[in-house]
Length: 241
Length: 144
Figure 1 (cartoon, rainbow over the protein chains, first blue to last red):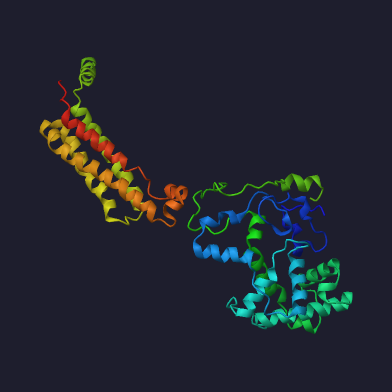
Figure 2: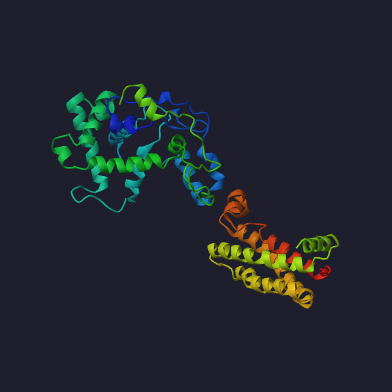
């Protein structure tokens, strides 16, 4: 609950058990962030869309206005993998970034990353195998599909997956499933303007570019962090050091 | 020494400043030309016009120096080169505006492109230095 956001401790992979609650962050006033909390409550990156060229603007606005339809995954896989994406990204309520939609599009259109692990199936197969393995694991631990077991059990499973602790034939077939999945999940999540609002990223720097290139300088249009906890003092205060 | 300084002061008060202004032109042109060289070097001399202020600077400095010693130079060569220098400054304002316009986003991103593009009104300094040279030609020469 009170782990703070300055260090990486609140990230699902790091935490697993003791997740920081985004309600500790200011409520988003302009724009949208996942779960409507963030460090930049008055920042809406989409208000910069006039500063992007036509192609960029179309592409980015589309990510928000009309996310791609799910065509690669079937209904059961969608339920399982949506739950997986939301668990690892700690999206516990709306608004959520539809991460799986972007992954589905990539797999459906076959526009993959152009590389893969030698000891792994290709990415589309990996995702299907991952869905099956997650469901099997969930059946064993919670008696239901991954999308229907408790949040706590899901966290336990993704934690074990990240640590490489899961065993069984389903998992040995995809030894690096976590790396492959997280690569696409992070790419999907952080290519979405709502994630940019959350982290204060001002979007593409073209044609307007950066001009204040020195250390500790902020571009005039860049948002200022509204939630500043000095981690050094904070960690000491809570006796975590 | 004292009388000499009084002499300079009297000349200035009477507007007899030809040698002083010639020297000022030469003294201002040299650092300006060097500065322009560095800035245009940074801009990779993308336009051949960027060489013109650099080419014109040595003649102006020489004409200014000559104007200190020769009234003929101050009245003939100095104004001729000064005029070219000033005109080049006016052309420079136009080319710099064009340079900002040609940057990605042009004047639709005015703040960024004016800050990062060619300094819009900087070529005006050539007009200023050229004007000092022109002025030198028309004022009276100092009496010593």
